[in-house]
Length: 493
Image 1 (tube, rainbow, N blue to C red):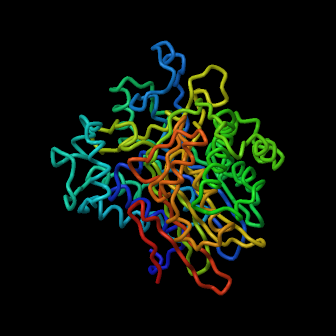
Image 2: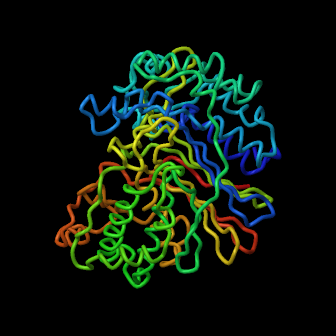
Image 3: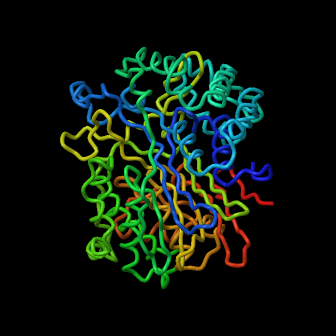
């Protein structure tokens, strides 16, 4: 796309759309997207919210009456309006160079002719095949089983949707036969969705938020994403001499884990649809970070996370592109959980997200499910500026881990002088509830010391998150990194 004259946004969106066939558990046109964009010739950072709202018939009391205290992951009420398609078209109108027909063309070809399933994707499929039933199995399990590496997947129904989008624009998804197919699948599952819910959807350009970490500006997408959590966490860690610690040692691990718990407790209480959230400035205030830092015991694990922010999970794709004119794009695209809700439209095979599981059901909570409301989102694109200049678009996949991952990556760069690849390769940890998951890259003595401090340490079954980044050097060169924890690569020409 870049060699053919497209800009960074054209390339990022074309790549994201193709990932809908190469990594179908992770993303698709039935999902959402967010982006940060720095246009060519500018050091400005712009933001776009491509997430959808709860439908008009969404009723949290109906779920509470069933004895539920969380939105079930495969319930039709977990399906908010898919926002990605509208988001791609609106971003193209704002900042794109090529037409959407050209951007969609590679995906149309791959969805029609098929791609070979890669080992990492077949591994993801193996744990999710049981979720695919009915139309979902018809479209996504054509082999009658989970795929093996090299098995070819085609999605001709979605190829037809993409062709209609190329010819008729976003309305081909949100109105007419495709929308009717989506609504019929949700109604068959017991959902209150109506055609008007899709027809009325609109994504929106937003104002990004930012904070400072030892001279490096961290730019994030505003709520309903969790980017404010990353800025709060950076503010907490800036109160400690992280640079004086062993980057793989117990002292840093403990402080980071405790700071993360405190930042995520704030997230769980405050982050929600921007029309309902009143505490954003409080989260971004450096004094809030200082006060939370003062609560950390450097010798003992004492912090706890409240669990009221809804379901979190790890299935997302991230793309960053910088073009010859130095336009920089940070784009994240997801179905939320693996294969989203598992609800798939019959005719066109559109797999639908389950972002509504990001709502909570606590009455009166800022993130309580309500009609027309966007849920708290875990997916967040990132960008770094230094001395007023954009120096690095980056992103970290991994559901709830993303805010923590942004700050660990930033700290690796700033505190320890790592290059982008080193900063990704460095081992990770993440507190999830009462458990502190610690990757094997830490030495056994660190695991033991953390346990002695009161952390309930577990080694995760899979790697924590994944990431991509591009550093823009003053001398004009670009330097990229791609996380070995996921399929991906750094490519340039």
